[in-house]
Amino acid sequence: MIERRPFDRLGGADHGWLKAKHHFSFAGYHDASRMGWGALRVWNDDTIAPQTGFPPHPHADMEIITYVREGAISHQDSLGNAGRTEAGDVQVMSAGTGITHSEYNRENVTTRIFQIWIIPDENGKPPSWGARPFPKGDRSGRFVALASGFKEDTEALPLRTNARVLGATLKAGESVAYALERGRYAYLVPATGKVDVNGVKLDARDGAAIRDEATLHITAIEDAELVLVDTAP
Image (cartoon, rainbow, N blue to C red; front, side):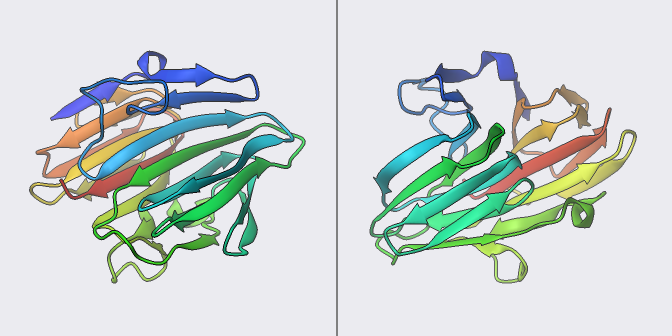
């Protein structure tokens, strides 16, 4: 089963400095049929104007992954962490027992991010934050784990949940396959480009909610940058 969720039909909000699209219910957008996909709870497609951002605010007991598509995001939190994550790179905040953070676009250009929330396997763990560069060339023609709750993914940022966030880049006409274990859920979004997934065509920034597909065969119709979440039910 692959359910295409067209970008132009997603929920969202326009705050002026922030233009947001929500793949799942979030903030003022509520759809009872889109409360999550397995342990995946939030996938926001955010466009942040230069020299603006999210002021300090709290979170608890959530794995929050930020994938920077364009520009850069500058993070600061109540643990004393601070960092700048550039396009193509990833940061992970495990909110745990509680953390307050800010996320600002300190650049002179627009920043675009995917923010992904996944429910942790256990609550009440100490909060943490980390970021890592993931050169797009290393993902050419293959999926690379960017953040993961699996010990074998040694190069990925750690998650406290039975899930992986993966990235790949494909040139037009190029294909990649991904095996999805029985009972697991996947959610795929092309950050850029058009792709075919087991016969279902996706445009840039469309979502695909996937289950009961043993293997995903993904072919790029045009050059594409992909982000995939593989999670437990």
